[in-house]
Image 1 (cartoon, one colour):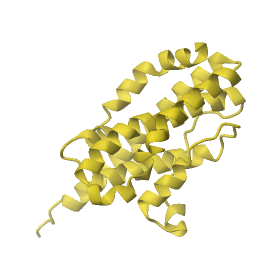
Image 2: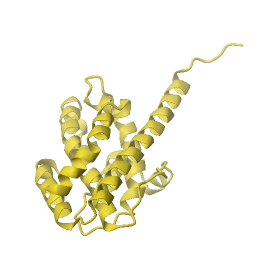
Image 3: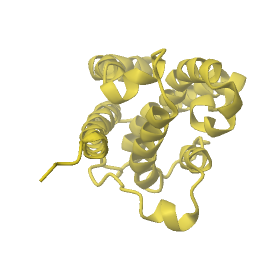
Image 4: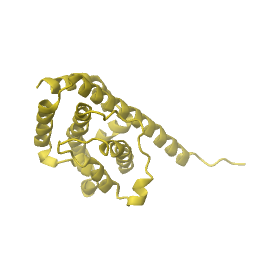
Length: 196
């Protein structure tokens, strides 16, 4: 699997780096809270919603935005006003879209590990963990179909790899932005009132 291996190699470092992002790392912690989960869901929705509408492919993609909408339990008006990421990777060619699909569909594999931790800690709230649950036990089978499709369809390997790396990079920048925003909101709420 030549192009898929190139994608793995090209994204390896930034992928590992994201595992340590404070906004994501907490999801595997024993101290994770429902607020932590919702913050990540809001950030994920803000990134994948604008990107998913731009990626056109014959590949059967996962309804990530729809899953996150179900998890957040917000109506259409509320969803419309959620912040969206404006820095997204280019989607001008089929090969670029394949590179993005590699990252998007691959995120469901990591989601499975996170889901196991969250479902164990919040067994009554699994209905709000659709994104992390992904396709459930069918996730590995779907992933195999994804990489087979990419391997068969991709012509410009460099374009696909560049798009995958750019997707990870844009995602990291967006998560940094969201983390800083959430921190400022937490500090604002917890800040004691000043006395005159």
